[in-house]
Length: 163
Image 1 (cartoon, helix red, strand yellow):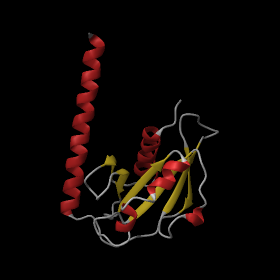
Image 2 (cartoon, one colour):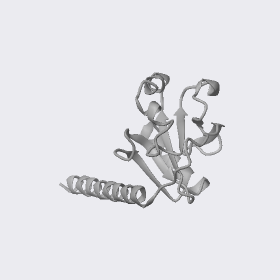
Image 3 (tube, one colour):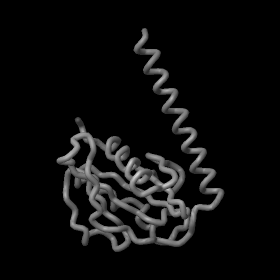
Image 4 (cartoon, helix red, strand yellow):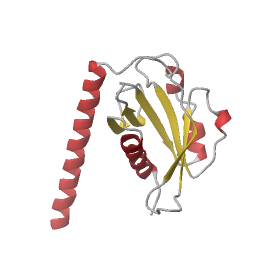
């Protein structure tokens, strides 16, 4: 099985919903922040976690050149917590900015289809602003569009397979 960003995002979605009991997640979220987040999740308390998924060290290093890192420190339209979720390479947790969290996904010796998740460094709160109704509405709309597009794509694949 190929381990790619999509699979890792799926595993992280499962982790946030089942293990962490977050109430909502959405992958590849564009337009919520001023950058695309690989995954965002929302806690019952209304706090937003953003996850950046990386499968190689070069991409991880390039990510630090992006403007989002300047916005994360003070913008209430940024997440409350920011995490890197990595697979296939190592990162020194002390090289991360102080408030960023680090999750390492690893092959699970007990269950080959499910990557093990190891929290190397907990993310610290970036700000205390909670998700308000406007943000929640935007998230629900984005989730609805995502589901609609997924269903359309699945239907088109099914129709093409029949022909």
